[in-house]
Amino acid sequence: MTVVSEAVSSVVASCASAAHRAAPSLAAAPDSAIDGAISAMATRLRASVGTLMSANEADVAAAESAGMSAGLLDRLRLSPERLESMASALELLAGTPHPPRSEFVRDLPGGLRLYERRRPVGVIGANYEARPNVTVDVASQLVKSRNAGVLRTGGAALGSATALLTEVVAPALSDVSLDPAAIQLVPTPDRAGASALVAQPAHVPLVILRGSGETTRTLGEEAARHGVRTLAHADGGGVLYVDVDADVERALSLVRESVDRLGVCNRLNLLLIHSSRYESLLPRVSELLAELGIAVSLPPHSHPIGYEWALDADREATVTVLPVSSAAQAAEVANTETSGLAASIVTTSEATATAFMDAYTGTGVFWNATTRLLDGFKLLAVPETGINIDKVPGPRGPVTYPDLCLRQYAILPA
Image: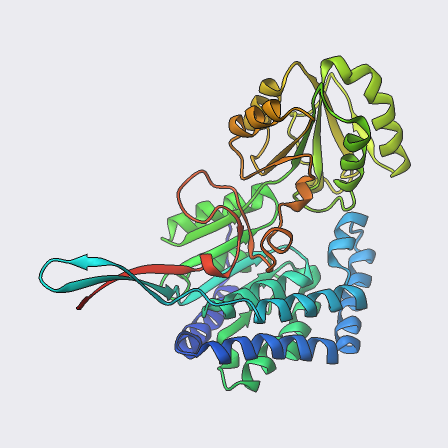
């Protein structure tokens, strides 16, 4: 259990209290104000490129001096192109329709009618790694769902996140007369801030957890002790199975597409190859990955089969390779040895693809496609707050603004 100092606890509690007070401003806002705030975020982001880049360059320089790995630096680093992509995503989100706040379900006896209503949670917390873009992704999703928020990022990105909040998010809310205090950022780099965030049940009943598996699981356990619910994205790692009936060129193309970025959860992590194709295909796969600066881990493995390389700062440029005897075994390995994030089969056989997709129980399953597509923006055309892989009812897969609500039943006279 993490020891949280009184100073850190006080800072986080202050953020939670401020967001709680501001939450009604968002809950009662019309669609036009909500979408206007998100559009204003896009406008202000484009107008603040210089300020944002300066803040980010300072974060990156400090991280480099501290010895941060290349993959983590890639997550931390902003560029004018990435900022423009963030602005475009905001514009798209602003134009995305709002789910109906109330829907008729059925007539009840006695001249009554049943409706299902959507209500905001109130305040949602978010703890995430040192990725500045997530600050905007989560803040905009919270605003779209009419929830206030308390954000806590890794200390390496705190300067960038602060600039995004003060230059983009808060003034955009003010532009449409919404309370800018609705989105709070924990101002301390102290890691104990995450533990303090999941200990605010009165004001922050739900916290989105993103980051390394062990850290997220520990925070989830701490949250449970305080009666705080979590939406956790703890583990990742994409699986690609090359079937006996695979088109080899298509398979190699998907391998390349699946490692375009190594520090992300949906990258290629485990490559399964049908045993009858293994000896002929392995040299070509190894050559391709070597050209990209990526090592292969071959049997016998000195690590768990589903070991997530993206979380290994020293060896993230690695892909595990394993021969399997069938699509059924491939699905079993993916189900039992990996996180259950996403798996893809490469095959020309519809019957085999269908059998694999029916057998795999993970969050996303694909046929002749890369697991990199398991992403809120790529799948649903809106940013995500994270990807939930829990095996329980509720939002699963990319979590976006329609998921961040509570269901309420209302009975009215007909």
